Image (cartoon, rainbow over all chains, first blue to last red; front, side, top):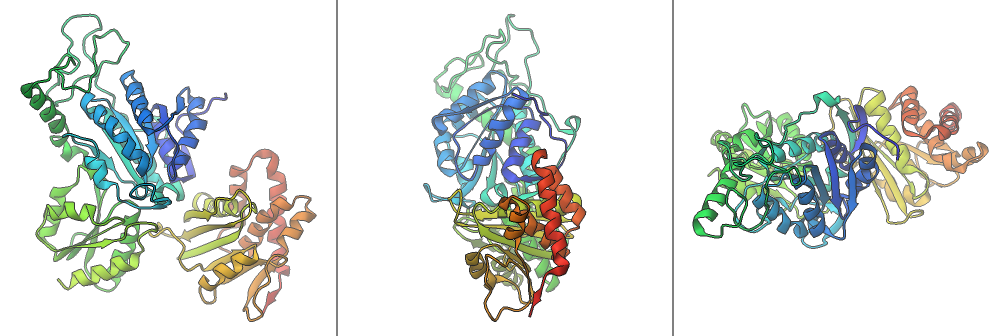
Length: 385
Length: 180
């Protein structure tokens, strides 16, 4: 097996899915377990070829339940680990996403969204897994989900996903869509020393000594992570556990643990949240769009401006945590909010939580990218509000 | 400036590859912005195949081709399917041995790309002959940029033949008849 560079520094004309794979490698991902599924298959293909070149491990699993379990295991052993899937596989992964949340195991799951429910439209785009990403597993936990709008962001946000996962010890999603995953565009990959890297917080005492409690959190609510096999006394369980990691199945321990799991993300949401704004300074109509749909929205806003309508675009880069406070402040100044998305109104519903202004959805169930025209029509309507 | 290009043929002709090369030439070697998308049937060979490239001076927002400004067809069915979508006065380029345009067709550029490729000893480079011809007649991307894309994409053992195929198509352009 020939060796290859982990960071493909330079300019490339790269498929979105391949950019995700290269982002993972650049971030130091050395373990991928997955079950190929359109339209995410090119991520697995690329990593099957590339991981062995950099001394990493690629495993094609029997299904998505096992894929998710395998990356949780690899991460517990110290690896940066990832899987990639689409809707049906994402559903199957949900149980073990909850396990990762409960055991505080950092990992990255890429979901290249396609038409759903069920097998739906295997090769065609949708953005309908937004709420599943937020609430898909059982119980209370907080999640982070990035929505790339270009192959460049497929690279950048996959790197970011690994850093966020390690910083807070949580599973993190890259919630791409088929259009972004299957489009090819220029991607600039920086040199290795310019790739942002947040190290997993590690125990400050040597292994073997007394006193290290693997689930005792610091002030930031994140416990340092001891890996299996290093000599620390570690125990991981999906049961409610105490600071030692041992089952403590009582009301008090449960509330303390779940409250911390939720709070460690909520308290840092302001640092995790990301969005891009354009032409919002004087906007009377704000369009909120994400992923590939944001590209259509950008065009619609440009045409609206040419028509003299003061429209602007807010593009959430993190869908979770949702930049709700930013939406609240922006909405105060505008007549109406327009939310185009390839689903029946998932983010529109979230927007409604933060404003009493009219929220006009532009919805399609998926199968084709939302074109600029219906967004423009709705901007025109919103401008009369 | 935003130009939409659709390249269409049947699976196995290498349509997807020349779409990738064209987009790469523009985005990496010609200082432009470009997005490449593709669609094809489940068949390995046969079945419709098309490659769409948007080339622009500014970052491309909407990435898909809706009304191509340029249409390159290497298959009769592709011509029939995509010709109605070509903008009025758009650039039509075809392989004259594989596509018989409607008698009422206006101006177009024709090249026997597949025959010229056979003359080079390899029918499979017909796609790159066509890419050379399209580069010349469209003026969308510089010749040197496409050649650089060929160099950075193809395996070394295939490069010489493909550069010859590209030159063959490019040089055919001045002789191309412009039917009225």
